[in-house]
Image 1 (spheres, rainbow, N blue to C red):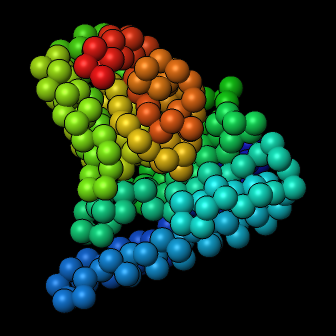
Image 2 (tube, rainbow, N blue to C red):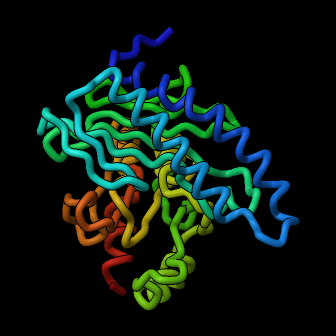
Length: 264
């Protein structure tokens, strides 16, 4: 059994508890596909229920920490150094359509730096977790990024800008260049799980523009502790502020970044 810190135990416990309701709601939302009204309002309510439970569990253990919550926004804590960054349902569109690929994401950020993260996929019972200096894991198995060195052998995950997002033109310039250089591109619909998959070596890299802190806070520490590199696409290191991210194994981060910047 791998020793987990108190913070990781709090985060994984909160994620598992919240996932029970999410699994129940997912079973119901699949049935709502056939209704006239549709499942949109139902899913919004599910988001809020899960977020409320996560906040309660985390606050019970660390009452002075602040929060940044996808649904409820920022909540200032007495401790100005530590902030929980929470996405109760990453992959909402998948969930809405009955697609079984979504996750709960919890990041702990200290003085602006992610130091611990949990991404939980309840349908597969995969608990991805990491803490600064202690490695990256899925359940009890240690993770390591892929060892592939060649771009033409690499599978790259990405996020396609959807309605209301301003990055369409930039993405449409980036996409064919990456397609022509790699073994394939995957669009799964959950940035948190994309980053977890990079940490697990299932994908060699992930890039996306215009994300929110709750999409990536946990995933950043997962990739770093698995031996990967994470930066902004332009090479900077303020991903939580800019929302632009490139995560890859140690061999392909530089060439993929160079490729993306050549068309940006």
